[in-house]
Length: 97
Image 1 (cartoon, rainbow, N blue to C red):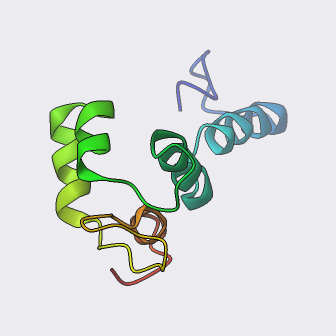
Image 2: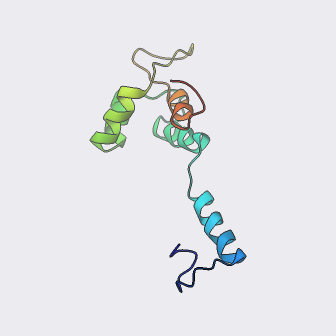
């Protein structure tokens, strides 16, 4: 409430509500945005390697991703390749990984 009613009057103007919702939705990642970030880390490959995750992410985040990403099954994959697209989709509840 303090974000949309800084004066503490218990009222929220429509403009304050619109401003708040605009900030909230523009700061929110989508599965596509997360996948695009992984694609950058993976040098534009459709998969990412464990060593790339460990090199590019803090240790805790890398291990989280490694333990939850499924293996990449595409024809252009290499042994140990991970599927960041499936992971990103599952992260946002758009699949059942």
